[in-house]
Length: 258
Image 1: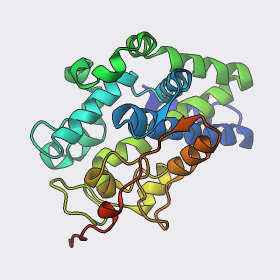
Image 2 (image 1 turned 90 degrees about the vertical axis):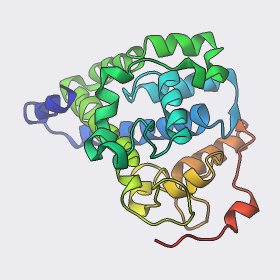
Image 3 (image 1 turned 180 degrees about the vertical axis):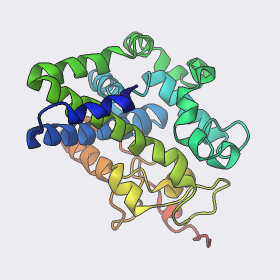
Image 4 (image 1 turned 30 degrees about the vertical axis):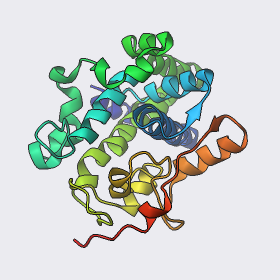
């Protein structure tokens, strides 16, 4: 339905300000998805305060990708069974469409498997957000409408959200199909500069699957990782701390050939 709602761009006045708003909300929410949902809640690759932890969860959930505990639990399970039969979104097991977005739409996967996220499930505010996961995106949608009317809602929220979905989902699907493999992982994860640019560094997927604890997924200086750069800046401001980096042994590991 949200995809179909994108047709509304032909029925609202066009303004470059609306496009700029959409891009800003794509980039902003992509950071919170990658830094919050993924690197913090799924992999605990850095530490922060309880207040900023809540903000990471809230703004990540404006991406309309369900609850923070739900997201982290499914992602941890994905790593445990990557490209095996129990992997919830492996393109090698169930095909491209299922890995890209079929899995998240299936009612079979609606439950939050709390046993995978006991560390974060102890926070009452995160449990509340996870239960009422539509609150953050509804508030964002209302804010865009109040800011600029229907045009801002359509471009800033609807179109931006759809693009954000596909940007995020392409890591589950395309990053296991296209790209190069540096490390000999047991799955099909691959590195892609293009996907990394679209997703603020998530495209260095083979790196990530080889050493998932790292806050930096672009292991080398030439591997652009915008989420890491922002987190490094936040560490200078003492907002986040104890950023986990790949050890020297990981960087020296033998390269795999494809």
